[in-house]
Image: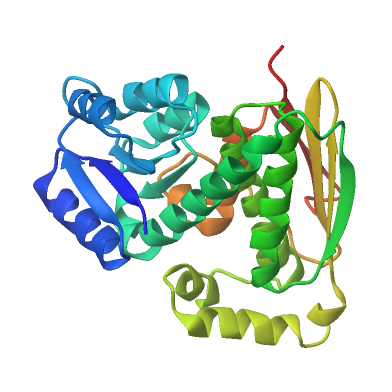
Length: 299
């Protein structure tokens, strides 16, 4: 499916990630540090880079920054171990598209890689329309079926590519943040999924029963009456994206505190961290049932 460059100095984690990615039909080249990764990219460009954060010579943060600077069309995903949460936040600020905790590799790695590759693919296709779309504004009303998330997010990425207000790295990152906001609005805002429910975990792990359970809930009262609103406005100075839901749940949660090790293991908290790390400003309204996300355009 894609050529992936994997930078990881732990033989155990390298073997696990290579196996997960290969089983998902990707070709994987493995290196043990950021310097080797940069040298590999100078020879052959991959479709995506997956990198550890703590590595000798050139670490994951430095690698992410180098990729964003030299190869903005190639997205990067970082993997985090307990104790390196702050490094993951820094890597997201430097240009990483997403992150996966090492203790969630089996559940999340292929899901995150697929999502990131899809965003990058669509961005690349519509890059040929750069500058042809002027100050677009549009809105969607979405049902609570998780299958509605990808088409909406891809449409936004397409319009950002055609409007040419940010580079490919930033467009993919905005797509990731938006997908998280809509996912949280559907699952935790409208469907009111709780920590005891396993449907989200099963969905992310590729278990079809997770999606089936979420769809069943979405079609049942009172959840079937709720909707998610998405509004996008691309101006000269910034892009503003509003996501809101009318269910009784919250889009995000405040405990455990964002950035703590415990928060990295909860999908609702992961979504909040992606939103805050990628966007330049986020403004919550209506008891966390509405968020305005702002991305400034480079001058």
